[in-house]
Length: 112
Length: 115
Image (cartoon, rainbow over all chains, first blue to last red; front, side):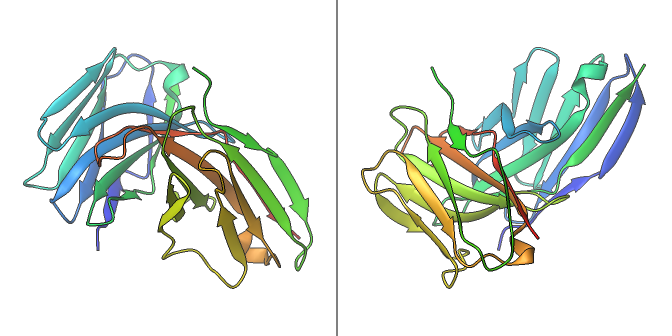
């Protein structure tokens, strides 16, 4: 059974700092990994999708990496802004049923 | 293109009452999902449809939850009777490709409070 863990559970950084969010998964036989952002009271917004054959994906100030063999992914946010404050969730697609398993998220606060 | 539409956004009911949530996926998306997200947790899959067929409903509490996608487009999730522990956000998501590699898109969610 796939299990996804995100560390830290919460993070507070001053504006302008670069930061890294971590995601680990127990079953390395995955199809892809997707990072989402969730604002309070809102649905999930897709940030980056990394296929199992890829090592990283970039979008603006965001860079996500994937090390399938070690069961890890990181989301790097450069030059953080207060608008980046949200909960960040990673989700892994795996298994014969192609199920998407979510982590519990990292709650990020970027302060002025 | 329009995103995943869900309604209602908020619903408050008393325990043992019934409730229904509606989802209209992105046009052309064959795969539709219902997730339950309890406060402070990641979303948990309730049911997955591909067109109008059920692919996975292993975590759906079938004694009280039901879902349908009769014409392979929009879908309804029903809870009857509701329990206190059903208080959560119910998220609908859709995916274009029927292969395993497609990107998932979510709606805004329907927040249920059971009193």
